[in-house]
Image 1: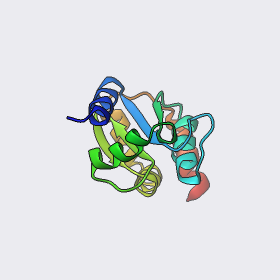
Image 2 (image 1 turned 45 degrees about the vertical axis):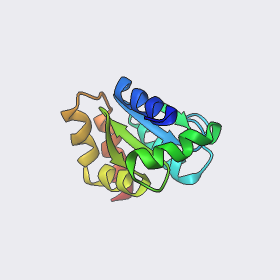
Image 3 (image 1 turned 120 degrees about the vertical axis):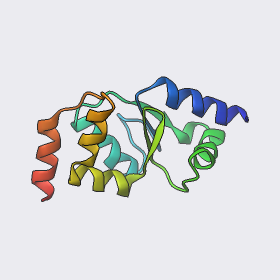
Image 4 (image 1 turned 90 degrees about the vertical axis):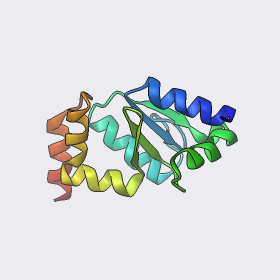
Amino acid sequence: MSDAKTRIDETVKANDVVLYMKGTKDMPQCGFSSRVAGVLNYMGVDFADVNVLADEDIRQGIKDYSDWPTIPQLYVKGEFVGGCDIITEMTLSGELDTLFAENGVTFDKDAADRIRDANG
């Protein structure tokens, strides 16, 4: 296993929720990363952020790890969930709430409902 793959594997298994993104949760560096981090932040989800711009090996490695070509990438309890479009759809449909609830991830249900109300 490559060093990047090992580090990615350890990170996704050590944290309940991980977002591989361009930038950080406090300072996203692209619109797609900003959208997903914004949803998670607004919903009060405690998540680890990994800035792929800071490490080229991780930037390519995460694409190989998930077999998914784009960033951001969200992981919950070690499982790849999806990128920006999938997370947006799951947020609006309520599937993200269900995923978090089933995995014991704390989130603000009222905030999730407000996102849906604002985008309904």
